[in-house]
Image (cartoon, rainbow, N blue to C red; front, side, top):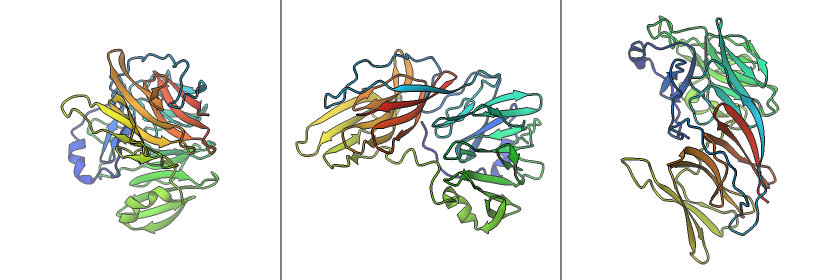
Length: 367
């Protein structure tokens, strides 16, 4: 789980990047200021959320109950993709940059494979053409809301041993958006591909020769550099990737105003953090403490105020793992848990999880 900030690689980094000698291929942004290439010759990389790819204990809790003594039904799991390809170096998911080789969002998944022509994305079972380089950070790709379309960033440039996997010899990125296996115009850089809510229109931002554009269905509208950085998230009036850290490290109050979910600061600045969550009854002041966790994100209450939920990372002697925590009770263990959402009626929570190379879409009833 990461705190991701906006930004782009600027030309001043060209001299630094040119010193790197890495295998060309699939690239992800570790932050908005740097890009990290997939190294298919090394063991899987780690991230802030999960610094181990050891298989976690994968046994669900039995008889799980909330603080009101109400039994929670067991979750239902659906395998949305399983990636066993030769590209086993790293994954980039849509939210957390978890340094493996897939993109997952809800019931939709795209995995990366490689052949002698380049890198191919298998999108919900349908392969794309091969591309020299693909970029899969959450601001480089997107599924349409209905999951029928997928757009991602690609380039014809490959690493030639001089760092030119990012730039051509004139210092240009030369990237383009691919949607439904159709490539768009090549620009110096592109940013934030996204679909309208009905899935019928594709938009993104682009820059070329010092000019900035908003591109909707291939039609360019010139914008300012400031707009390029600040307004490209909402091309169709909604954010296709809501801020996962909206309530990070903040106290939140239940919808009925009767409970407060708070978080203690990191208890150790020199080693693994020990984070605790506390639920407090506003009228009585009584509180219950939960933890310790190494990281916590996506803190939410259910609409009826009966349940509080968050994704927690654990560092224990049995291995590091993630779990969805409901009312202080940790659920099934995975290498990573992400994309937590509530159903429209608030009666269930949905999320994605990864166990080794298998990715799940999970529905957890709340009532």
